[in-house]
Image 1: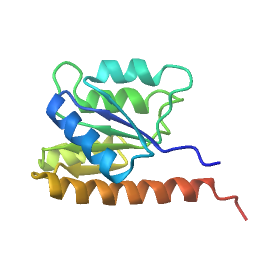
Image 2 (image 1 turned 60 degrees about the horizontal axis):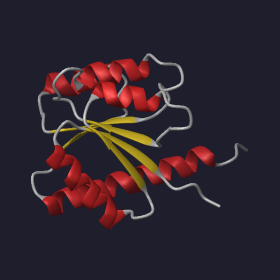
Image 3 (image 1 turned 90 degrees about the vertical axis):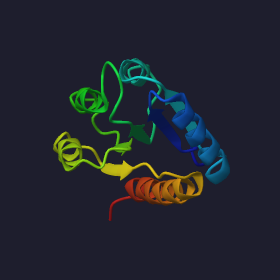
Length: 141
């Protein structure tokens, strides 16, 4: 039996979280999407025994602990550092993109501006990470 895919979205904007929930429901109803509104809440949840999403989606611009600080904390924790983190943000600033990759983000996605475009973006994201998970689970020759 295949374990359902699990994703964690960290975004302080309730409207963006709701859009993501709607998109996931349309594109991957068997997936589990957990949403939290802050980096601190995410770190606490990720340190909970038994909670390990396949991929974390992380907003950059958040009050308090921003996405970069959250990413840095995730990557400095031995247990959490192997979870892929995809930055999902409105920022197209080259310094933000460079900083995300220097902190070992797995990918950087600029949020689409309309829902249909966001669905296409999320569909490509889901396809990629499902294939990645399957490849990681293949036995070595």
